[in-house]
Length: 202
Ligand SMILES: N[C@@H](CCC(=O)N[C@@H](CS)C(=O)NCC(=O)O)C(=O)O
Image 1 (cartoon, protein in one colour):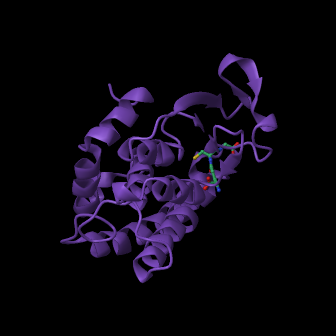
Image 2 (cartoon, helix red, strand yellow):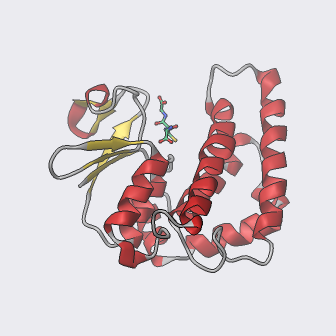
Image 3 (cartoon, protein in one colour):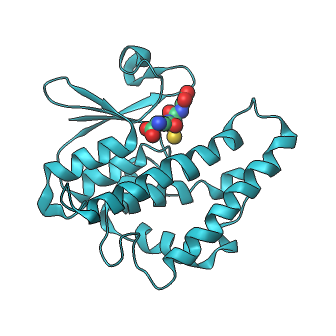
């Protein structure tokens, strides 16, 4: 398999899922601004939507959308325990988290990264995100992981998003529970390997 990624972007989430589940893969670095990938290839030819992540299977099939990719990866290796079995309430709970992460957090950050966002909208976007973090922090109080006591693909995704906080004029220290969670997930060997491979560790 091949994972098209951009360092530190949301593609870190499937990258973590690949390493946590021990599946072999190659990384292909994409410049999301120029839409070129390693070696000068046309990324729009890979994903017409122009964004990472893209997972390319050995038969050439391509899968996009992070929450779908991580569930696919988890289901290929059920023994990794990265997702509860499909059709169970626990699995729906995982999907509930993935949907929250993608629509409420991930896309809540997006205007703060865009050079086109008017400056006077940014405090509004930060306030909305801060409200989500207040709620999330309460959910994670006394809990190791989003699903309770077991790590899942949702944790790799949330870890990825929490790393963006300092880049949008906010402070992770304002949510000590989230900071401790971020450090806990960041200490996992597979997560450290993914961070190293993307050049994110100084
Ligand atoms: N809905 C997509 C969104 C992916 C996305 O936002 N990717 C960003 C990086 S985190 C990107 O590649 N942006 C470049 C662009 O849209 O031009 C998913 O969940 O996978």
